[in-house]
Image (tube, rainbow, N blue to C red; front, side):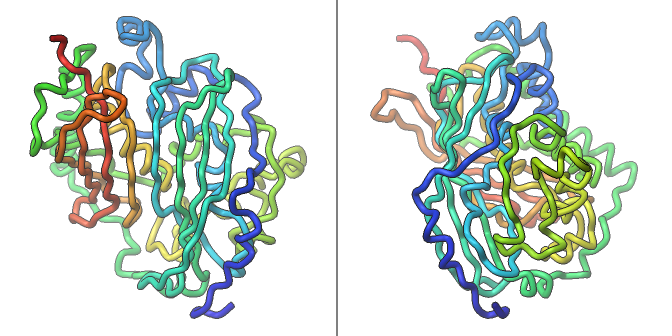
Length: 389
């Protein structure tokens, strides 16, 4: 394969056929939930404080809606990454979620059925011919009840073209003064105070208006340390948590330096350090800038699946414990880079009652860094309680 061609024909044989997966070995623990919200920068007391959650509608600690992906071995991208594309790299391109009115608690199990959906090849400025591949995840609990359906988009492209696209002018982290950090902490606290102000109360559908702006959410500064914290919150990235499936990344076309033994069940019994993709293999670009530049990124960068969680958590936190995200579509435009911050804003663009009688608001969401560069756009439908007649 050269920089101007991309043979994706091997994908065809996998479309519509369920894949194997790596089931977790023990039930979800409250500390798994706490570790997740900590890593996702989501300081909602419902998900980590026992006294506060005991006073909630659930009467106990509850996982955020974003949590099921934490129990998957491929960050949700496995069904969107099948078939051989020779000498290629992968980035996350987006997510679509359909959430059921069902939550995860400590003691639950989560299982995932994965089915590759489709793909299309398009010309991009980033890497020339690029494969946009989609796959579906069906997360269920121990009773077989559906928690959420998740359609993930992976972007697969020529390794040569990706490396050629790096802008080395962005190789260094921006510097933040002490005054800027102090101002940033004030901006971050404002959204947390919104969570506290709503508390266990309802955010009534009747009271919100089309054109209303959601409170700004800010977090960061992102760093290699914060990216490593995110990585560890995905259960698969702690040794022994799953009955790992066997996969051959070289056979899928990953370059040797980005293949290795990530999540390899046999190597984990011999030398588990080699199975950690953040150190060796396809995920090392997130934490090591020289490998990030091989992927096409100027410096260390965050995880696409985390970005999807940020969208869900932002909207669910605003909706409160009596509301929920019903559906969302997010497109990733650029990563969270080390040294940057993330700023989330959103606007209510519609109010409606769906065919199930649910009172919904439709929300347009934007995620950007401190320079205004767009990281993600999303549209979502959020259920809110209706005031009693």
